[in-house]
Amino acid sequence: MRVAVIAMVVTGILAMLAYGALLVLIRMQAEAQLNNQLAFTARQVSALARAGNLTSPIVSGSPGLIQVQNDRRQVVAASRSLVGLSALRAPRPSVESPLFQRVCPGARCFTAIATRVAGPSGPLTVYVLAPEPGLFPRPGLAVFLALGIPVSIGAAGAWRWWLAARRLRPVERIRAELDEINAADLHRRVTLPPKRDEFHWLVMAVNATLDRLEAAVEQQRRLVSDVSHDLRSPIAGLRAELEAALIDPEGADLRAALAKTLKNTERLQNIVTELLVLARREAGLPGRAERVDLGELAEREVARRPRRVSAKVDAEPGVVARVNNVDIGRVLTNLLDNAARHADSEVIVTVRREDHVAVAEVFNDGEAIASEDRERIFERFIRLSASRKRDSGGTGLGLAISRDIAHAYGGTLTLADDDLGTRFVLTLPLLDDAS
Image (cartoon, rainbow, N blue to C red; front, side):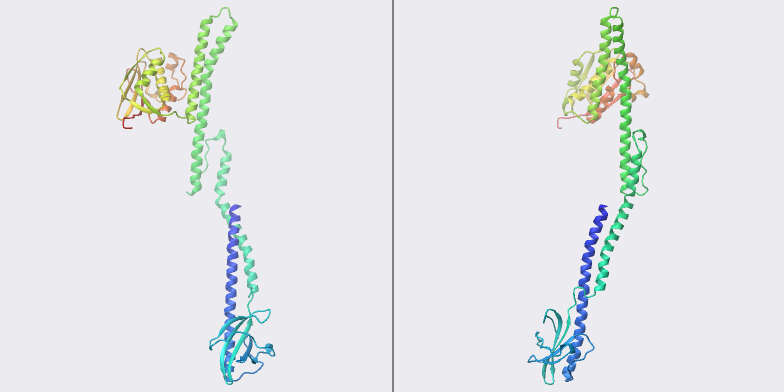
């Protein structure tokens, strides 16, 4: 509608300008034609006056009112309609060249031509007049052209309406296909137009957005499923311990029941804490980056709280990275907790430089992880069967969160080959002194 209205307004303005220009052109043509006719009549009468053959009234087959005056402004001869009228008061030419002028003897104006001629009895002035062409010298043609203005406006509006509708038809098809896609049918995609125009790239962008949306929804579904599954066990354990204590409060071992309840509560707390960290990361809330000495940070995290297997730190001095202290501290804590759960007797943290990269390794001498599971352990809520048997307190989120944090700071977190146990390798861009 907007395109059609704009086209009609523009066409109307251009049509009015063209109509005015055509009227001016027609009037100029009419004036030129009238001037030629008056000049022709003036030449005929001048020839008669020069030969002394003037008669009154003057009979001429050419259009125009004729009046011939002498130097005393006396009418010598005139056409039939001017016989008996007073002499025309109009300028005379100084030479024999014709003088075109506009004269208004009364309420009406005329186009006149004056010619100086030498007659047998003295100089004479020949005036030939005709009414001026009006604003519409050709009324029929003016009316015909005026009718073309609304016709051209309507045609322009209809043409632009049809063209815009035809051009926007792919958008309507895209909208119809998008309306058919819902949350339960996110695998569908909009059909690509065959022509590689802007609508083709629009559909490409829409399909890419649908890809991301499907992945996000699938991730959310998987997260809800995993969370509900992992929360079910500690909640069921809490309920069972509380119900057993209520059934036989006298015979229950209160200390053992409270210990089991505390263990399940700690697991619930760990899961909720890790979920909050995960939500914070996915919400795009990065921590403030600062200069962090990885060796000192590793020593602080090792000494911060005791674990089942104490860790040893072997760190080169001055291994500095620009990261957030809390984020990387969480990564090291997750790796240390994981190593302490699976180690037999030893956990070693190594910090060193390696080709402009800061490297922190966490090694434990426990059972090595199979090659097919080395990437699965970084997925959310993935806990291997061996891990569940050894320690049921893990959340299955620590390694996934740690890898996300490492990637956020331009680093990596991988599981290296080691026949003696398990070795996690954290790499971060090294910050040298010049930087």
